Amino acid sequence: MDWEDSFTLQDDLPWPSNPPAFKETMMEYRRELKKLAEKLLGVMEELLGLEEGRIRKVFTNDGDLEAFYGTKVSHYPPCPRPELVDGLRAHTDAGGLILLFQDDRVGGLQVLPHGGDGRRWVDVQPVENAIVVNTGDQIEVITNGSYKSAWHRILATRDGNRRSIASFYNPARMATIAPAIPDTSGNGAAAAYPSFKFGDYMEVYVKQKFQAKEPRFAALATK
Ligand SMILES: O=C(O)CCC(=O)C(=O)O
Image 1 (tube, rainbow, N blue to C red):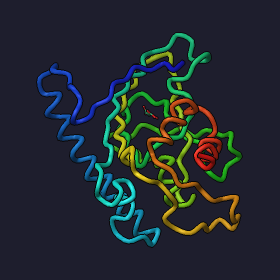
Image 2 (image 1 turned 120 degrees about the vertical axis):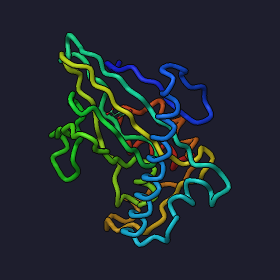
Image 3 (image 1 turned 180 degrees about the vertical axis):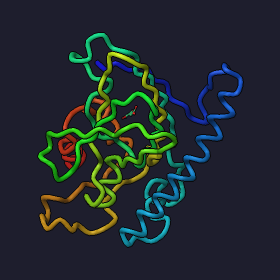
Image 4 (image 1 turned 90 degrees about the horizontal axis):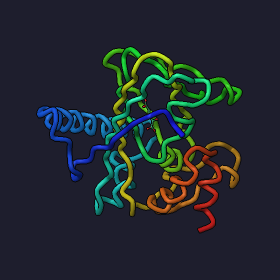
C-alpha cells in the first residue's frame, strides 16, 4: 500500500472539466515537456555516440508507432503514522524518460545513488521551477546499462500535502526494445539485456514493480 492519490492524463483520454483552465494549461505543459524529453533524448544519443533520433526510432519501431506519453498527477496527503508506510514504495520506472515537476515546499523524494552501498537513500530537495530527470528500465536496456534506471521512493510525511506531476515518455507498447550499443561493462554475457516487446515487459512490471529489476529482465529473456 502507498500513501498516495493519483490520476493520469493522456491526450486521448477524458479530462477533468474543472477548473475550466485546467485542460488548456496542462495540455500546454505536456506539449512543452514532450519537447524537452525529445531534446534530452537527443543529448543522450550524442553522448552515447548514437545517431540522432535513434532512441525515438526504437520507441516507435522506426516511426511506425506512436511513443506513449502520459502524465501522472499525484497527491501525498499528511500521514499520521509515516513510520508504517511510504508515500510510494521504492521502485525503478518501467519506461523511457521521466520528467518530474515536484512540490517546491514539501519534500519526500529520495534516490538510491549508483556506486554507493545500495542502502543509503539521498533526498532530492525541492527546488522551485526545477524538473527532475529520471531514466526508466527501457533506457537501461537500450543503452546496455550505460544509463541505469534509478531506484527512488517517496517518504510519507506527518505534515504537509506533497504534490507532483510526472510526465512519462515511453516506447509504444508494440515497440521492440533491445540494446542499441555494445556492452562496455566488461562482464560479457552476464551484463547482456534481452530483446522484447515493451508491452510484454509491462505485463511483468505491473506484478513486480516494487521488486528488483533484474528478474524482470530475466523473465523477458526466457520468453
Ligand atoms: O511523485 C513523485 O515525485 C514521483 C512519482 C513516481 O516515482 C512514480 O509515479 O513512479
